[in-house]
Structure formats: C-alpha cells, structure tokens
Image 1 (cartoon, rainbow, N blue to C red):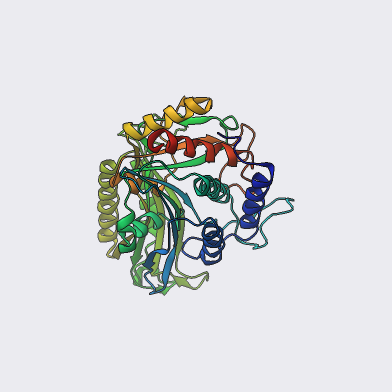
Image 2: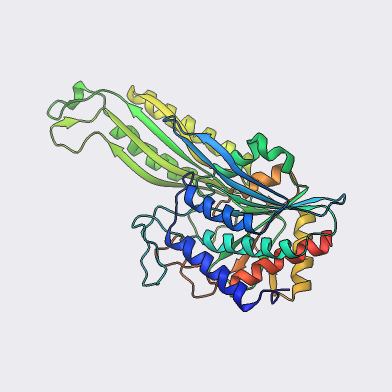
Length: 399
C-alpha cells in the first residue's frame, strides 16, 4: 500500500512539505499554514471540511489558535469514526542548514518534523478522496499548538469539534535514532506528563550598600534550586521510567534588574516537571508548591506559582495499539516494542482521555540529528510509509 502514490503524487507531497518547511509558524499563529492546508484539502472534496478549530485566550487577552482543520471522509454507512491527527506548528529556533527549502523566517523553523506529519496526512486524504471507507468515517485533523500543549485541549473543547468526536484516534511522530522507516510501538505509558512552572517571589528593593533594609529573593531562589534538584530522581539517563520517576529541570532564573546599585526585590525561577503518570505529576506539583511557599515565608516574600505548557501523560490503549500492530504486519513494516515511555511529552494524550488512542514512533534514521536540533530535517522517504500505515489501519477496520 505504501507504493500506491504515483511519482507525480509523491513529488507533489514532497513539494508541499518543502513549502511548509520554508514558512513555519509558531503555536497558535499557524494562520498561513492552515490556509495552505485547507486549500489543498478543499481540492480533494471531502464530505465536510471544518476550519477554525481550537481558539483559546492567552493571559494578555490575545485570541490565539483557531487554526485547526478537520477533513471528513464518509462512507454513508454505519460504523466507527477513526481520527488521524498531525500538528501544524513549528518551533522558535533558528534553522542551521544549507537546504534549498530551509526556513526563510530567521527565528522559526520546522525542526520537529510537523511539516512531514502534515504531508503524511495530506497523502492519506488523497487516498481517501479516491476510495472512501466502506463503513463508518475518517476524520483527518491538522491540530494547532502541539508544542505548547494547548492545541489538543482547545480542539477538544471546541463545540464545533463535538460532532467529530472519534471512536478511535491515531497519530505518529518521527524519531531520530531509530532505523529509517521502522516503527516503535507500545501499549500503556507512551510519553511523559510534563508542565512548566513559574515561581515568582517579591520582596523589596534596597540600595546595594544596605541590603539588610530590603527583602531580596536571591537566597530563597538559591535554596529553591537545591530543593528542586533534590526532588528529582531522573537525572541519570539510565533511570528506569516507572511510576516513581520524577525529573525537575531548571530552565530560567532571573532576579532584579541588571545593575550594581540595587539589591533586588523581585525574582523568578522557571522549571519543567516531568513524570510518567498524571498522579505522580500532581504529587510533584504539590511538593514544588510546598517548597516554594516555605522558602518564601522564611524570607518574608510574597510568592506566586503559575503553570504553562501543560502536557498530560500520553497513554496508548491496548485495543488501538493492536490495530496499529496488525497494520504494520500487513504492510510488512519492521517494528519493535518501545521499551520505555518517551521522556518527551505529546498533547495527543488528550485524545486518549476521550477514546482509545495510540501514538507510535516512525524511525527517521540512526544518524539523524535529534528533534529540536537546529539542523534537523524530516526525511521525505517517510511520507509514503506513514500514509500507508494509516491507510492500512483504515482498510483493516473500515474496509
């Protein structure tokens, strides 16, 4: 089934990916990307095309998102709804490459392969436009803002998505370090839960010659660093990823203003928390908050803790994982069990809270630069393979 694309069709899909690669957009801002995708889908004449999915409001009042797109391919007969999802957003990283199609936006790039995932789903839509499922229906979802963890939640909360709610959901992510075109698959815990926390402490400034007359957050934040590191047991790369796994990564610290004459009165610390399960995440969050409250109280500081980039754990359902395995066998694609959950997070886990869902990993090469590296690029040879796996799942389940 992976050979069902003609040379012209495959060339078109590659050109489509390269065009997306040249003009990446960040989470919640994928308006041009969404327009390009919608126009391509419209030309395939799906039975329904729903745009504008997944708006949300930032703290500053800006309306973001609303760039999600769902193409619906109906059989006209009763049966389950299968959803296949990809991501629209790029990353705020400068691309370092000599590719002819490298990003033309200096501070943004598709360095996670979402451009390739979009090409895979466009290819799947092309196949469905030629042959609808024999029963049920297929939803092809282009989702905004995966990188921030906001997109899946926003789409699922959108009333316009309610009529599209699937019975089963599937997604893939390419993964460097795995042989090209092979698959890693597992049931149960697939990707870690994670979230960012911002701990802000406020006291009172003073002249640098009289620090005792102010309330500086420096000592409290220094103790927070030690305390947060002590909460981690996942600093060892060989640490087993089980329910006890906890990792706290400090990503940013700031105190006061850059000057020599003032003892600072404000400061903040950013950290990313990571666990295998949502229950463990709640426990870790509680421990972090208790630590911050204690340190702030000891120094007489006001404290506030905010959360952002919230990703729940991504857990694969046994039923949908078996569907993927069956499709891989039928396609003759080599696959192996994924030994441990992935340390990175994926907001596809949100779909698994509504229906059986599975995310699998498609190898992008042993020597491929890692995801989010400035020289990463999605291998075009995976487009046909990924689309073929997804189509095989459809034909096996819906005919």
